[in-house]
Amino acid sequence: MLLIKNIKELLQIRDKNVKILSGAEMKELPSISNAYLLIEDDLIKDFGPMDRIPTVANATIIDADGKTILPTWCDSHTHLVYAGNREQEFVDRINGLSYEEIANRGGGILNSAKKLNATSEDQLYNESKIRLEEVMRLGTGAIEIKSGYGLTVEGELKMLRVIKRLSENYPVAIRATFLGAHAFPAEYKEDHKGYIDMLCNELMPKIAEEKLAQYVDVFCETGYFSVEETERIMKSGKEFGLVPKIHVNQFTIIGGIEAAVKAEALSVDHLEVLNDSDIEVLRNSKTIAVALPSCSYFISIPYTPARAIIDAGLPLAIATDYNPGTTPSGNMNFVVATSCIKMKMTPEEAINAATLNGAYAMGLENTHGSITIGKKASFIMTEKIASFYELPYSFGTNLIDQVYIDGKVVS
Ligand code: NIG
Ligand code: FE
Image (tube, rainbow, N blue to C red; front, side, top):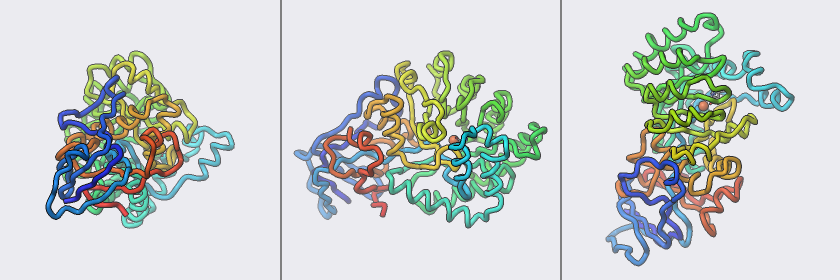
């Protein structure tokens, strides 16, 4: 057993029946000042105020000495497995080209697909694990990773096998999403049906058989997958046990949110553009909105209207979108800070969005996202800070002293 004493503030303490936070609930971040935390193996066994600290025989005692503890970040949307970088496109954008213009020239997702298909599975694993280790040190304890840079049977399976291998070799909780519908490869430009047939009839059965994914994603967007195509892929995914989680409303509003809610998607992600009827559709649904503010930051597009979403009483999660094109960063600390600075979320709302709601957005709310007895002992110990407001305030400074995942220190 591990007993941590003298914690200045133990944040995000929740009863196990709290699974998601909506609207005004997001304003509260329950905590205990001057607290202890007891860990048994990989789980949280107990916590409470220091004046009630138990005596535990043979426990290893750690003195937090006035540091703060909060659950590890739950990053519910990433494309962390990819080959090579796209720094040339970054410079092209600085010089005036738009994301769309770059994609139309064969850059963008197709550029990453070309690189990925020329990379061996071992090489892809080695590149990806470096990124995974980095985000673990930055406090991420649970993460969703998508395929979508293969766009061929072999390439997509290669990505999903790498994700599986990462989940077997690292303590961080990993959820896998099949995103074959990320873009149409050049050879299928005029044959959308042919490509979608391949995804649904060839790839999905293999993915289900090898149990390579829990979710199915589609880039529902003008110039990518139409609402009708998205509906077909979600329906087919569900037949193979894959729950929809959809990229939608990044650049244009085409009705994808309504389709995703009808298909009982777990989440709708991006939402940089959003109208009142989208918000109405999300009300009374089980689908959670996910904002990706570092994507907005990096490619200079609008920020998801977090205030409108939360003030409408809806839940919101925030995630990195770590990918080589629109967000080459997996830093959830930056996401939390940017949510406060650019989306006018309070620190309490941002931390709720990055922990419990992030866990919900990848189906991990029973094991991650809060300091709860019986949940995984995955938490961040900060440097000495005056209050947790310093975390988003001192954006760009790493205020993490140590990260514990499943009860063990990440080194
Ligand atoms: O979430 N929008 C679609 N997919 C990714 C970016 C893909 C890329 O440019 O490689 C995103 O932003
Ligand atoms: Fe994405």
